[in-house]
Length: 265
Image (cartoon, rainbow, N blue to C red; front, side, top):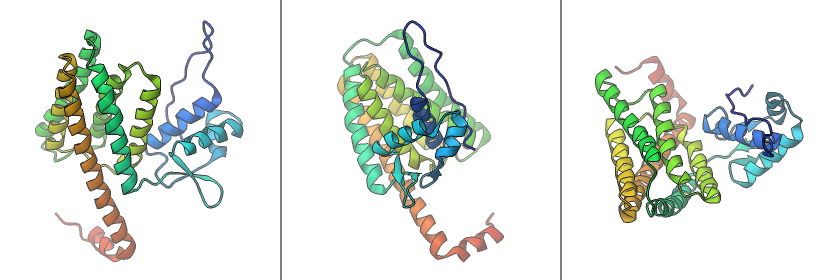
């Protein structure tokens, strides 16, 4: 059973229609993929999704077809749907698209004064990354654990999403959000960040915010471009490591069995 919490819009009020079953299914599947409950290459059951949402299979199929058109799902050989397998080329292209769109967007945001409440929310998200650094130093961990990594991802996504929302351009926001979500399919293989990575990300976020607040578009755009490029290098490095490990496990499984029986340290 695919079980994840799902926010629901209130029923129709003042002429605003309630979210449709197809839209619920669309958001639900996105959430399953983003959280790793539906892994890359994993199959999707229309029947199970229909049970989870208490609906017929027709709106589920429509949502899956939409996600397939957007690149998140692929048609499998047996006629069903599977979560897309992200390739190295996909990661490169998605980051190039993300850089082009987000850097343009932050330039627009920096061209106008920022609301104080938004500035405070963004600063709080930046400061949370500083708290994670303090936790690593205090516990003498090398990297963030699973729970801490979830907190980091929430802060990172929240920072970028809030910035992009300030463009007041719904179409641009959707394309950027979809691009980031596709990247997150691979990010499931992401290892926990270490102290150096957290410090670098916090500095980039602070530079971006300072540039926007001071309405220095060139500063904000340069900082965001550098941030995205560094993230791309990390994702490609992780992808290469993951592919090497997967290849070794397939070609020399005995090597990994020995290490399981005789762990180092």
